[in-house]
Length: 370
Image (cartoon, helix red, strand yellow):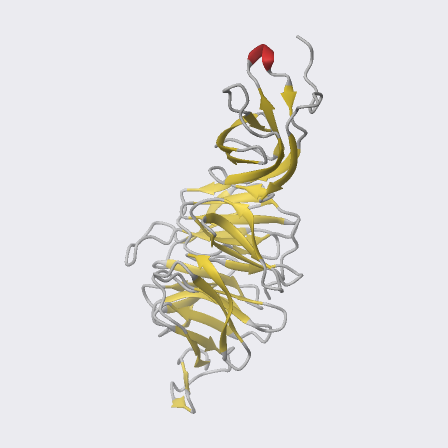
């Protein structure tokens, strides 16, 4: 048989664009080009690297493929014909495919990453359900180790300026501080249904109570008397002041929080609406709609250029949505069941689904969180 050459025939299909540029197994990717339709009653075949992909749609200028389990990053090629007649192959376009890094988890928000590149994720469980391990650590070589066993319904994760890991408990309305050795102590209480957490540059902690409140928790200031004064209250733990920073519509799942370099706090929280918003809260606690038009918007992160990434649906496509500072939205990663993400120091990202973490190369430099 004569060897096949990509695009060797004048009537060979031609790929011009692939969107989004990255996907998880089960995610869908759209191919744009020419000559992508069925011919002679036979549908085109598609390969992602060495793995056949499912063709969900075939039109002259457009094709949609579904990424199969087991696929890895590689070239996407579309071919026409079967057997001896397989003589028309397209040019190749590169696709980044996420691969599993940890399974049998239950994240409900973003994973967290420490200064050494170790990733932390939760086994949150149903509300009030005690699980054997609350938080796992995942090393750079994907070795998974138990880290914390004593937090009920571990929900939001964030590293503080002190290098300790902080975690919210939605069952107890409490935020815990965890040492690098895994020792747990109470940091703040009375946070309602505490979900998303984030630190600002001054060391203040913000906690999203999914019933509708964003709390601001000041840094430690020594022993407290537990008084209430001037619209704030001290938590009675380390003299920290707790303020009601902003109020939003209650969420049916959780609030998710992230800061940009200007100190604006971005918040998402799934509601019953299919036209959900990303909220922006300024330093004075004033709330505005930053972007509207997402479905079930959840975990959020920012890159160094101020682009916002949200685990959400955009125009019916689920994945990681990229929103530019000009508030233009597009799908950056295609994938189902995503609840959050965290950028790693090498341009990669850890993607959290409802039961696992995935690793994908995106060539994106994430914003430093503290």
